[in-house]
Image (cartoon, rainbow, N blue to C red; front, top):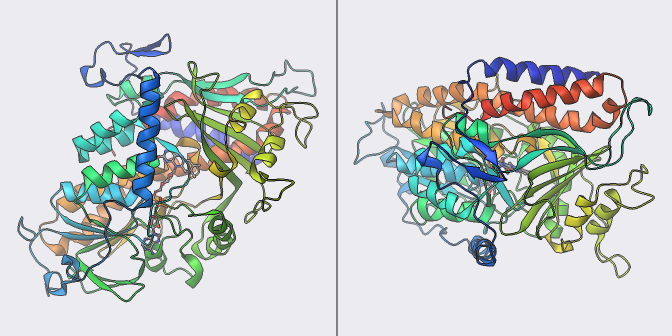
Length: 564
Ligand SMILES: Cc1cc2nc3c(=O)[nH]c(=O)nc-3n(C[C@H](O)[C@H](O)[C@H](O)COP(=O)(O)OP(=O)(O)OC[C@H]3O[C@@H](n4cnc5c(N)ncnc54)[C@H](O)[C@@H]3O)c2cc1C
């Protein structure tokens, strides 16, 4: 509890300090009648939420289904054939380094074809570099439905590829036009029943994500299905065949200053490049070697690309393996297991709310508009790492769903704590088939300030560099900023001898911002855990809520910047 109070103060202080660098609030844009009215910025005039007509709903759902089929078939990816450019050692291993020219561009190998790898590859490709991605998986199987591509990440994408940016906006659903915030999940008396108390579903904190974006001259946040994001980056960000599937990197060797890196895949294939970028997720093999971690620090946690398990059996194996890997990799179990699903359902609050968290004791229920009359939800429940659900039986054919219906029970006698939940969680759960629900324990890690993200001609990005809790919806967005910054620094390299210093600059420019965001996401989740206890202490509860409400605009202004 003490740490939570300190966390609130730290969070508020941190963001108020940062807010000193933000330009004053403009009064030109306002949310009116739940639709965006853009008065003075033609750039954003196309970014309005389209009405959810039958045609639009079908279009969004069909696009997602088509992209999922592409992901399952690994369309746009290739297997290794034997004649790839990266097999040529003589192109990079040159004593004294080599000059970078249009005919002899920088050669970059990226491990991991998730958001971080695909964006970094798109950015390097756009800057004229030769790029290959080595992805361990044979197909894409992302965890969870759509994600928020927030205003800062949209700007990074726009700078990398106008086409990808336009495609994302066309495919996405604007969420910034409606309210977001925290609600109390159940009726709660405060101060031993002496305080005013809350009814279930009452707003505790509300915030507007539109104004901070527009103030910074950025495009409002959109949600886009993960397979659609992958499809767009594969089709428009990188040349066909850039992603080599079934290519798990085992180790790398530096060949000498400015002389590149030799990458060895698990099947013994050797590849050569000037630069190696580890975008291989939280259990990164590249980071393991970069930081000299334990043998057990990495692993094929999931055999689907983008961190997703291919099936239920694999999800169970992942839950157990992650516990072992976390120790070796020095990652932190957040204390939460997370059930996630996308349901086809027109939410009862769709016109008013785009994102909400229903807070409870040791659990919370997050939901967001996924577009196309679908809701994406996450149920975070505090429990030991490595837990798995019962196998389905004839008596209990839907073990995940039945657990969640109990955890968020909206009828007497309520959940195991006796709390009767707001109807909204049940509304979404009841619209969700069991097979759509995926479960995963959530891990994050301390900022790698002293260990660094780069050494020699090797660097890391995305979750490999800064795994964070999902509360701020910034993990993928920060990975996007990383990709942009990495390519900007590599663009300055005129001779391969300069790579080490370019990668060091990349790390130094990125670490302050990602550290602040990682800490904020972690504090946010720690606060949510202790929320129930805090509400029972006089002054602390109201103070916590007041400070959170006060801080949100500053937090959003810190996140939504065009400079990263
Ligand atoms: C519940 C939840 C909600 C979220 N919501 C949002 C949101 O709204 N907005 C947002 O921006 N972020 C969100 N995030 C965070 C976001 O999903 C992650 O930060 C992002 O996916 C990380 O991407 P990555 O490419 O770094 O890692 P991953 O997606 O994990 O990709 C790593 C890839 O590397 C491959 N790989 C691993 N090891 C090797 C190896 N040795 N050789 C070759 N390949 C390898 C893996 O197969 C995988 O494909 C959310 C996360 C969660 C859990």
